Length: 174
Image (cartoon, rainbow, N blue to C red; front, side, top):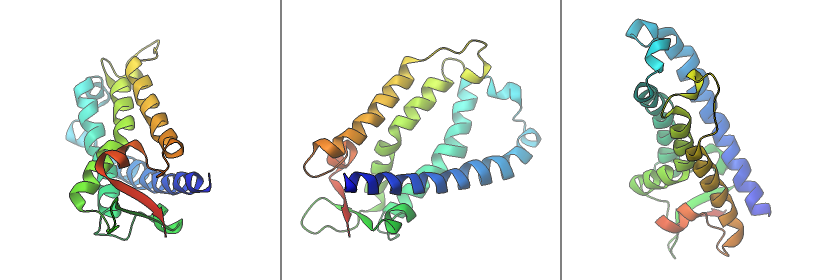
């Protein structure tokens, strides 16, 4: 249980940093000032493809970059992991830090639930523009995947998430 709590807090720290960088710095400080100047209006966002592209470029990609670079051997781990004395390593006897490529794949799998939820919110029409928003099945799939990731830490003796098992990585306590 202690391990699960450490991993959860490490993830929350990293999410807080990402929120600060992406939502406050990129979205509010920079893009809110430039959107209309480059032709991105409220009407532009009514198109699901436009909104998905905007979310991918201005939210998802910066977050993917954060986790990919900081969890790879380029850095010593994400700030959340470092603060809570956790390390992401190969799941073998060497326990080396992981490559950038493997870190990117891990990041995509780790954040897949969020991307699925984005799709559920944005398609077929962005929920923001629906008068009576309905709950969308795609969002439930994303939520269930997220829950299965968390539960897998409890169910596996190795305390790995499903995505760590798939790509053969492991978060260990230092």
